[in-house]
Image: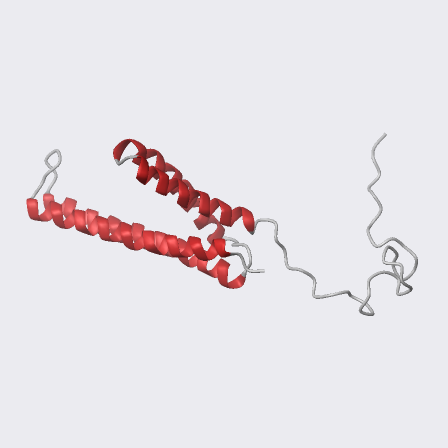
Amino acid sequence: MRRPVAWIVAVVLFAEALGVAALNWFLGIVVDRQEMSLAGLDPDTMSVSSKIGGIVFGLYFALCGLVALLVALRDRRPAGVGRILLISAAVVHGLLGAFTWGLVGWSAFLFMLVVLGLIVLLLMTYDGQEEAPAGPAEGGRGGDGKGDPGKGGDGSPVSPPPAPTAP
């Protein structure tokens, strides 16, 4: 069964990628046109660094959105670098949420926590899921073939016996 969480996370991360890139680009243009300076820094350097930062952060969120999209398409949990990217995106949203509470306000904080919750939900929803077996291994029926699903073909239990404990 497909879960809509991965699709929602992918759409939100792609939208956030565009929003972050556009906002930083806009701030770079504002700094450039007003020739603002912060503690004697060159306005051109500030403008270019804002634009580069927006592009880098936008690409980062777009890559995380791509991982979420692949999770949605494959209906399997993320593995390897993709899982690390989603975990890092969750950490980034937690940190950004903490900063936005004081700098921007509760609405931005709420948005960051919603995205954080969606990413964590994506990671936890697919966490323990493994590939389901294609079907019974022998004869199309489970068990010993005589109607007893708890026994193997030689009369032994299907599951291994419990491990011995030390005295």
